[in-house]
Image 1 (spheres, rainbow, N blue to C red):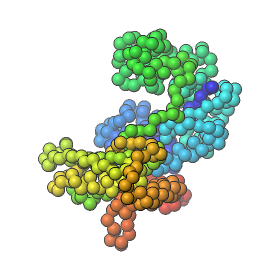
Image 2: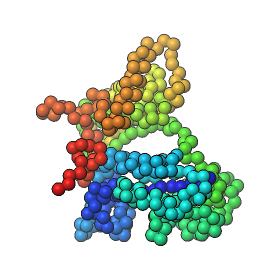
Image 3: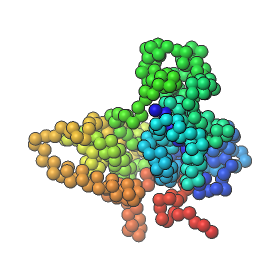
Image 4: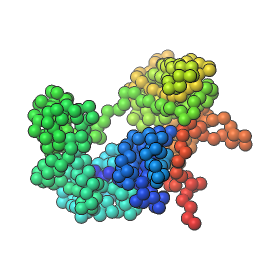
Length: 429
């Protein structure tokens, strides 16, 4: 059964350009949280030798003529645009397998079901409907579909769609694919492979499967099979995470316990939401805090505390309460805190929670679980943090309004949430 892959080109940059068309054909980059470093580049920015991960302050030095437009990460916008792309793909193809915010696999019965002309038409339809340019690769396996997609993206002659449907095309593509560009082969493995003379994906196929399994393990042996046209990677199966972490370095250091408690409450609420999404529950909640290790002129301090729950839980109230208690135990006055986080451990399936015969809080826990489910459904329909716990809110403003806490992020170049907020709709003059 052949697989296809739809990959959005320079996705974050493309999302910004949809609403700023004057930036087409100009160098544009999108920055990570706290405007730290480059995480997405337009082709024009790549041509300026701006590498992925370049710190923003170095970008300013690199861009002597000040021609690069930089945006802060706007994940609300990117998530909604991704949903629009995936909806078109789902309505056209049927069953899709989302892989990341900008990629999705799909399966077809045979190569005739989606020939090159239809694949090109699909890419064109997505671009016209959403403004997001995409590339499509179709091949016998998911790894080969990744290879095909790279050719569709790099070579204009493919018209945004490349199909590998014969052994001749497969070997030619692998001969032109560097080993470091193969999906599933990690950076640490590349030097060892190159010492063996493995420079291209075609070279990799010369190795023996048993030798690969013995030296590198099962995942790389599966990649070898996939490159040989044998479908064996199941990305749908995916095991649930055994620990869940939400952490952040703050744009401005924090020395107030109440303010830090608000951060921790938000981190804990996000962890709880992720926990419910994978239908799990956690029995331990760990909180860690640390000062700025680069500021040697300030008092240095770091600590962590784990709070055990009586019964494994996933509702926001219990997780946030445990995290708040853990923070209170380790908070130290006079320290300027730069980073904090929450980690959930001892995770088990939600339908296999070991309860206690003498648990007096089961009724309250059932109510908290129903409340968390209701909050999830409302936030899913109306946007993140439409409803949250009071502990997640900042102090009231002077006009007594109670705004959502802003996570202490540096976002000096943030664009509008054009598609999800009525107050930030695109204005046409």
